[in-house]
Amino acid sequence: MTEELKNPPDPAPTFAGKVGAKAARKLKARRNPPPGFWFGLGMMGLIGWAVAIPTLLGAGLGHWLDKHYPATHSWTLALLVAGLMIGCWNAWHWVAKEEKKMRKDQDNDDA
Figure 1: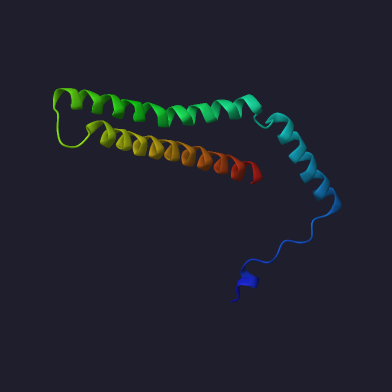
Figure 2: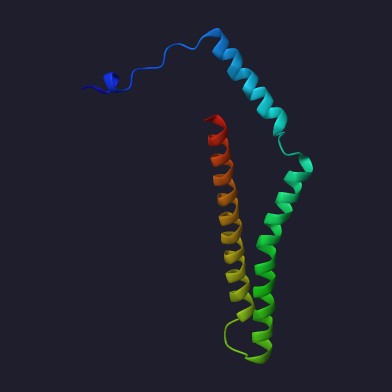
């Protein structure tokens, strides 16, 4: 059997169906207003701290190692870069997780 026979296409939506879908979208938008300006500013700050803290910890640890265990290379620079990389990975991971959660919520609302 062909695919069309297994899953027949949905009939054209009726006027009442279109009105009902629009009303449902309006009610959903009223229940879940979009996040405001301050929410976005707070998220930017959170991501900034997720990068800044590991970077500063790496620089601090590197500075301590340079003072107590001098070497030919700079521990401060090496651990600063390592902390920055860890912080960027942390921020990317957090943003990806939040995006996945938002897509899941949106898919659940559309269904």
